Amino acid sequence: MIAKIYGELKNLISLRSLQARIFIIVLAAGFIPSVIVRYGIMNNYEERSVQQRIYTVQNQLMIVGNHLISNNYFNTKPEGYSSSVSREVIDAELEMISNLYEGRVMIIDSSLKVVKDTYGISTGKTIISEEVIKCFRGETLSNYDREHGYIEMTTPIIDNTVDDSQIVGVMLTSISTDAIMTMLEVLNRKSVILQNLMIVAIVAMAMVLSVMLTRPFNRVTEAINEVKAGYSDENISVPDYAETVHIVDAFNQLLKRMRALDDSRQEFVENVSHELKTPMAAIKVLADSLVGQREVPAELYQEFLTDIVSEIDRENQIITDLLALVKMDKKAQELNITSLNVNDLVELILKRLRPLARKKDVEVVFESIRPVVAEVDEVKMTLIMTNLVENAIKYNKEHGWVKVELDADHQFFTFKVSDSGLGIPEDSLTQIYERFYRVEKSHSREIGGTGLGLAITKSAVLMHRGAITVTSVEGEGSSFTVKIPLTGGAVIG
Image 1 (cartoon, rainbow, N blue to C red):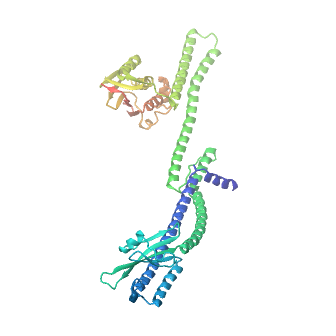
Image 2 (tube, rainbow, N blue to C red; image 1 turned 90 degrees about the horizontal axis):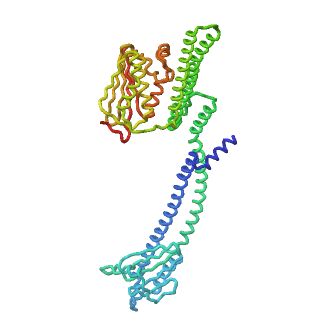
Image 3 (spheres, rainbow, N blue to C red; image 1 turned 60 degrees about the vertical axis):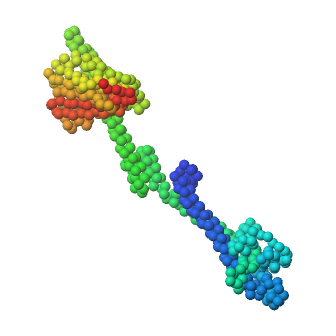
């Protein structure tokens, strides 16, 4: 249990781990929005509080402005003075607003003279301010200075007793935002506490989800390790996710291929042992026969020694073919590509094999539809063509025929070998490329085949990224077709 927990923590630390990446994604998906929401709420609260404060103060200042007009606050004529009682009431209202919002109110008349300053500093002075001038032109302005903690606004004093509603004065007001900032600090502390609780919950959820979401992959790993250790050779199944199903299916296919390769290797070893043991057994029987007899005639010695040489040649042929096949199987094997006149190569191969055909009275015909020059490995191409033509001659009937055709298009050239031979049973067509497979073992041994020729041929064809196909009717003959790509620079006449 401790080791498992240690493994989970180790996976979380490693950024290459899917578990760690899921943890980070879930953590980021929870943490980042919470931070954004927190700052969004704080900014929204601050903005709404400032606007609400401006709206409230403006309404109160508009009421005071109406009182200023109704009491002739700006009238300088003695007969137009407002009563001292009314003036005191208005001043009291201004002081109340100033004290309530911890601010300052200045009343400025049309000559830009400060008529009233709640701070008592600028009364009687002339003030020239862009905000005040714009307010006399009808623009009501407000400015929030967060750094210094105040809101500055201008409020027009409008005389509605005249027809054109003339602006006769301006109230320039500055109010403190300390109360808003205090509330923001309280709200921020609570939001930080809430955010920290959310982060703890998100971290816990991220850990749980990262473990739960990667658990199927861990089961896949455990199942593969069991197969690797040899505890099981059954197909594994983890159907939790589509991804694990794909991985498991691919592994099961690989496992199936490995089993087939193991079976093939075992069968190959058995076949090799059998094929090598048979000539050795024959040689031993012949040798024992000679050793066990006295005064054996020279003719019998000659006959037995000839048979021994034949068996040795057969053994040597098997070993040679096996070595050729092993070289073909090496993945690092490379082709020695050269530009080759395929027509000339076929002519040369047929020239070598015609003596064998004459012994069986088999007619060999070559039909070249067009000259072909391709980029191939000459040695392996010779091996392909020789094996196919030689098989067509060896497994033919007396007075039969072998037809070799060569054709090409702009991508591939085709080498086709047809014969009038014994043919291949339909149920054997899929097995003829297997090592040591023979359709008729006794007849094959009489002819001298090792059962490796077609396996070698197919390997050489695949190395050229080509294809080999066969059609056959038992008792009537066979036709092998090899299709090889004309690689870069290859031309056809």
